[in-house]
Structures are given as structure tokens and as C-alpha cells.
Image (cartoon, rainbow, N blue to C red; front, side, top):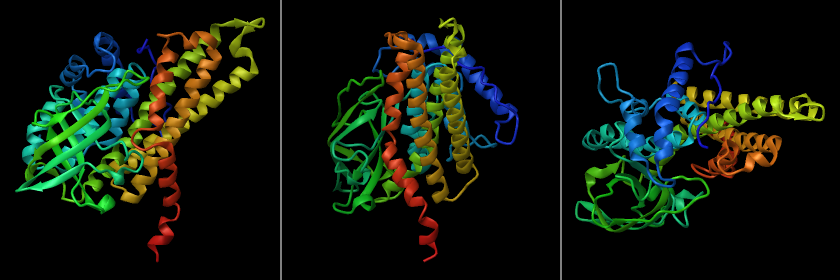
Length: 399
């Protein structure tokens, strides 16, 4: 079972609370998910892109939340981190398939929005936003996972453009995506300084790939490039500066991975509270046992701390904080929220006993789903490295 009623979404009013409008938005998204998206998610094939689900999300305006427009109606080049976090937490508390579908559209298309030519933006962003085109973010390779700067997919000069040679792996939405943000090496031996980002249509001759089966039913696979032609106008940002495009995208999406984790953790906590309050044991209810109530207290406290870290990171991004501050807060939010969600879901299963591991049970589904969040978009170890380095950055800047 991948969908559930979830929490009420009510947050206490105070200094760190969401605004009433933001709380209303969360409940609106939950209602859409419960009433319209859950049946479409259940009808999809595990491990495959669910295009009917994406189209429904486009029709209901959820995907448009990833790509805001200005007051004049023009496409903005900046996404809103708080809106992204609200969407992901809300959807995750009801249905993880819908949440993942939305998040992958944003991850794959945001570099185009942020750094693409106006022609590329006009061609692809409306299609991604209405759910008729599927986007993918193609960074990882067999030898370049956590060490993304070590990527080797080649972009060899070819007239006014390039030819791509190599393979990407662990790419969400591959090989079914319609447009890929691809990071390729344009200057050999230059590390992060020799990488360029490209927008590559999947229909381009020489693009291939295969599905990969994961523990969680997540659409993911490889993408291969056999002399794939890319034009100068398909460069995202500047030549040899593609790593900046990747890092700016990850700074936006890492807090929202935390929001995804918070949504799943909240669902697990709600399930544990409901179950222990009604499960009779030792002459009373499980919740009456001090060990159980203390476990629930730890779950709730760490989950709320995670939520606040996520909101703080999103607020830093939206308020235009320094890149250093955004990167640090994004890393903290993703690290703490994903590690906490793993703990909360595992503890919820412990409180449920064997029934929590029955195939099809909510907690069994969440247990499979949450594990990857501590790996993708920068593993927990990478986030700790980023945070650790940030502690010395102020003193280094003074030198």
C-alpha cells in the first residue's frame, strides 16, 4: 500500500510555522493526491514512468508550481524552494509515487530553466509543466557517483557542436525520458572545471539505455550516448562551467529531498501513534508502556527538527542568501531529514512488529522507499563533508 490518509497537516502557529496560505496549500495538495492521484499511481507499472499520473498533475497545476511565472505572465528563471518543499512533503504524506514523479520533473528540467537559452526554455518547460514531456537529470556514472567531478562521458568537438560518447547510470526516469540534462566532459583532466551541461532530446540519434530494477519501485536506468550530436544552442550555461549548473540545482533540490523524507516520516509516525493507541498488550495499550511512549517522543521531536531545518534551508534559498549559506543549509536539511526518516520508519516497524513488514503494508513500502534518500543527490557522507568544510569557510575568506 503506497497511499494513506496521512496527518492533518496542521502546524502550530508561531515564529517558525508556515503561513496560513502555505498550510492551506499543503492540505489542497493532499486532497488532490488522495482523491485524484492515488488511483493513477496504483494503476501504473512499478519501475516505469507513469505518464497518465504526470498528465493529471499537470492538469491540476502541481507541476506548474515547479516553474513559477512572474506577475506579467512571463516564465521566471527561478524556482521557489519553499513551494517545492511544500509540494514534496504534502505528496509524500499521501503517495510516494506522485511525489517522486513531481520531483523528477523538477530535477531534470530545472537546469534548463535556470541556464538554457530562451529557445530551449520555450520548447521544453511548458511540456514538462503540463506533464506531456518527461525530464531527467543525467549526472552519475559508473565511476562518478559521489565524486561527480570525476565523470568521463565525453563531449568531443564536432564543427559548431559536439558528439557525446559514453554512459550514464542510476538516472531517474531513464531510459523513458523525453529530455535529458546531461553533464559531459569537454576538457579532459580538468576535473569539475572541464564539465559542460547540455539539453539532449531522447529522440536524438544515438541515445539509448536500459531499465534498472531497484528495491523501491522507482523509474531508473542507464542512458547511453553513441556519437550523439549536440548543438551550441543546447549548452546549459557556459562551456566548461556545467558543474556550477549541477551544484546550483542540487542546492535547490536537497532541502526538498528532506521534505520528501519528512512527509514519509510523518506518515510512519501517524501510523505508529494510531497503532500503539489501540493495540492491547500487557493488560493495557502499547502506548501506555513508557518505552513505547518515549520512542514515539523521540520520533516526533527529531521529525519536527527535520522539518524546521528543511524550512530554514528553503527560506535561505528563496531570500537570496549567499551561495555558501545556501549550500550549508541545504546539506544540513538533507542529511538530518533523511537520516531521521530512516530512524522514524524503522522504529515504527519495530513498534508494529512483524505486521509492519508484510508486503503491501504502509511501513513496508516506506521502508523500501526511504533508503535511497540517504544516497541520491549526495550521500549522507558527502553532506557531512560539505557541512564540515563550511565550518572553516569564514576563516578562509578572511585570509
